[in-house]
Length: 247
Image (tube, helix red, strand yellow):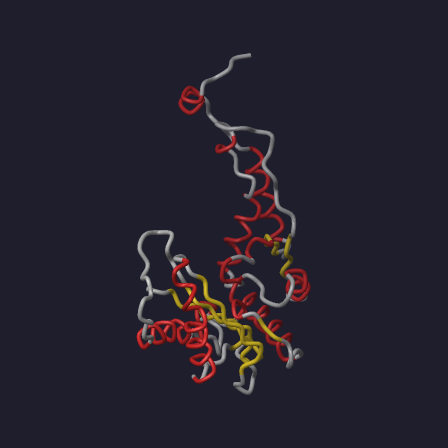
């Protein structure tokens, strides 16, 4: 039995990925028979589900002739340098191409959005995570970045108008960063609940100003009119996070 070095393997050995060829043919046959099977991995990035499970989305998609496969092929026992010469996802790659050709992904996005909207409508008094709020990249009606941008603008505005107390030691070096953070619940009616403000100082000499910074941010949070995050286009009670990084 001849053993090749990695360099010899790359230049002297012709690889025929018969498994990929077979999987691609299987996908072609399934497509001809009216089957569309997509990997659960399509639900990542901006399509990551909020509030609901992939299984629930998959059940609804199945009614529309789209099946979601929740298995993921693990690495085979072919090790480098050989592994990179084999493709374990040929079946799903061919199915993905067909789904794009048929413009199926907008249908999936629409079904997912409606399921999320239904969930939000059925949970009028729940508290939602700010991280699950709508973002414009989802390309769905009612999605915008207003609440996200508003927080960033207010972090800037708070710092711009903040007067540092006399004797405050400004940051110097990587280990002297300080911040004051607020967490609270923004209720549907605009009121603030469960406000918690905490300061952290990289320079221990600034600990004596803790109450000053915390009081300033507490006052700021309670006085401004917050833009409500939306969830599937709907206003709900939302967790909010606000952090000011000290100079």
